[in-house]
Image 1: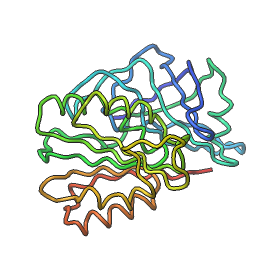
Image 2: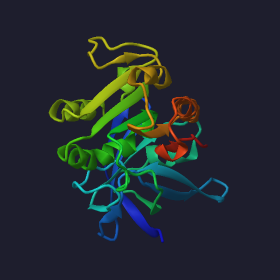
Image 3: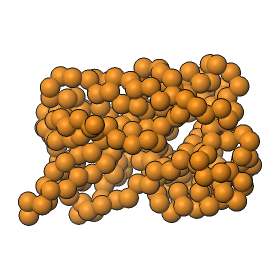
Length: 253
């Protein structure tokens, strides 16, 4: 059963022109136990008093653990996109350091699973859909250390400035040979391109990886159009639906 608690803002910084990274601690001083890939819900009210909520994946990089095993963190990090006229944007964008919000969780099953035996993980994301993969990095590190596994992250953005946590994923790739990170830039290439960069949308780059049912488990997170397009493509490649895990990010006012 999900827990309800209050969070106090302890740090805030811009990740991209329209995305803010927020770090919280629980007001009660307790750690948050979550499985990387899970999300929290932030509870608040519209101006007319109507209650509402928004969901945000936990982006915190905790300790290493096996897939499916919860980790405990003292700092709870999320990434929040700017939505024109959005109530959550107003709440979280204007929240001062020390400000308190109501939250609950964790929720969700968009997590690495202990029973998976396929040798390659395909992680695909757009926008803030990359945040659960950041939280998974310690688990990915443990999987790679055991050998016989490969992880490929395709991350779609319009330009370099919108590759959230891109530097962290690139650094991880440089120190973990089984991990590949490809920034898929649909509008504007980097001023100094990298060999790992790809041009176009995530779904257009998928063919390069030649997905195969005997090799791949796929995770799709982000824009619903991308998720639907890649889901259809993966089924055409022969991946069974249980080998395709999905989470859609929908912007709400």
